[in-house]
Amino acid sequence: MMKKTVISVLMLRRTLFMKGLWKKFERLTSKCYTYLAGDVTNEDAWDKAYEVLVEIVREGRSQNSNYAKELYLLDDGTDYEYDVCGWLQDYLDYLDTGKQYEKIRRICGELISMFSWEEEKPSDFRFYIASSFGAEGKKKEALEFCEDWYKKESGNIMGATALIYARTGVGDFEGAEQIVRRYISEDGACTDENDIVYMAAELLYKVSGNKKAEKRVSQAMKKYEKEVEAYFSGMDEDGLDFDDLDDDDLPFN
Image (cartoon, rainbow, N blue to C red; front, top):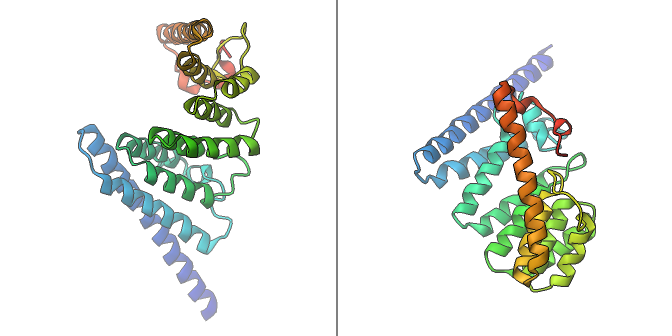
């Protein structure tokens, strides 16, 4: 009986500790957005919130080794009360605005190592890493990273897009176009599934001086943008909420 009581007390303490960590995370993330709204920089709040998030995962796994094996489970397990995934993206965007590229790579690397990624791929974080190399002018490092990524996930459109940018950055226009052609054709349409490839292709053709291809890609993108704008304008007139729609419901897919 005594043993069960002790175990119950310990479990209660751990539960309360976890709740305390989540509340701390909530307070810190609230500060992050308060400072952003006031156009005030407070890196400390962002960094501390991230540290608390790491502690939450560590503490959760000390109780259950399977705790939040996938990143999305942090939101799923808290009824999306804290929008962890959304906040992480905002944090990385904040660091990108501050040109803190090494920190971006460190944090993305930690997040990739922290979760199993069996159900979802860490494509967003890998794209941040690739972009940070490019923004820093480290074209060789960007190319090596993207080549390795594409080799492991040749069907990943974000990895393919990153490689197009990387090859364009080092002047390998032919190699970049090889990737482009795997995803878009001359008479193909720009959609929400391949628009990121179109953006990369537009830069490729602009840098390489292929004005004909650049114009074709640009026109396809403008047509897609007009379709999106027209669709959502129609929804506004009908008083519909497009946040509740699935991607499959969109007519321009």
